Length: 341
Ligand code: 13P
Ligand code: SF4
Image (tube, rainbow, N blue to C red; front, side, top):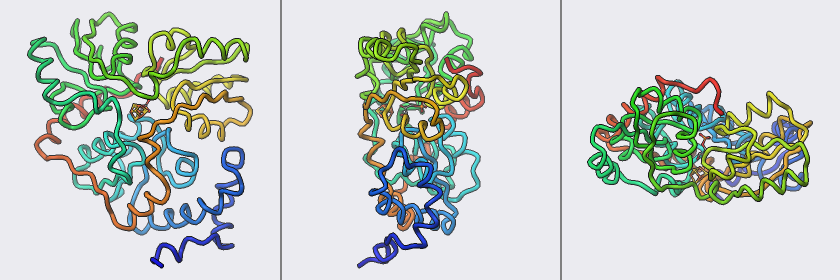
């Protein structure tokens, strides 16, 4: 038996320490599952303090991570801002690899852990630094805006990064009449619909959001008259045309908080509805379930293992990192759009 195993019992102390967390999660986690999660949550929270570690958690993580162990929860932009500002010596990124690379590039002196290094992203996998160099040759002098859902070699070739929370603002900040926008074709089309700047696109897509259709949303309108449809801009144009609001994951949550609709559908990865429903018991969440297999690689046992061993740690080649940091710093200087729709 390993030291960890001996600590993972659902003792009366663990039950008492985690009961307030469970009371919030009762509607989304069956009681029979709590004895599995609770000892992990209790131990992770102890180890975080011992390691001076901060857990930075994306909105798509499962509720036991999102509500059980996070120091920060939010969208890609918020995670980047928190990672840059925190005094913690260790950052555990509960998200995917491009998010962990962001944290490492902004804080090279810190240990940045990603509990499962195979947590990728179909957008990040769709383009390389060599592809960006070829695009720049094809369109000389046109600035490159890269969605932050890319790896360091791509960001190193770009002029500025953006996230879904600030893409329009970033594109307009450049003051040019044309930009190359990589790699999300649908986000790029959405940006083009919101600005006069001409947008040269790349054919990347998010494997989760590209599966939604406008027809699917119209059936929700029929079954739930008056439903508020809130969509992520990685969705195809026919989905965004059907939506009442378009925004980053945190923008979507803020919209629910502001509007408190009776019925709502969050057209995005499906764990987010569970996480948000906990905060808004008066709102009925219609829940289509498109899972991100990369986000779902992160689990409580893997987070615990990462804190125990301080592995796997993310590393980015220093030369690439310093070029990529310029693109990230320029984005952080632009900030979040005042309205994310
Ligand atoms: P945001 O949380 O930044 O909106 O990004 C969504 C996403 O798909 C991240 O992988
Ligand atoms: Fe990438 Fe889409 Fe998963 Fe986000 S939800 S990590 S964009 S594949």
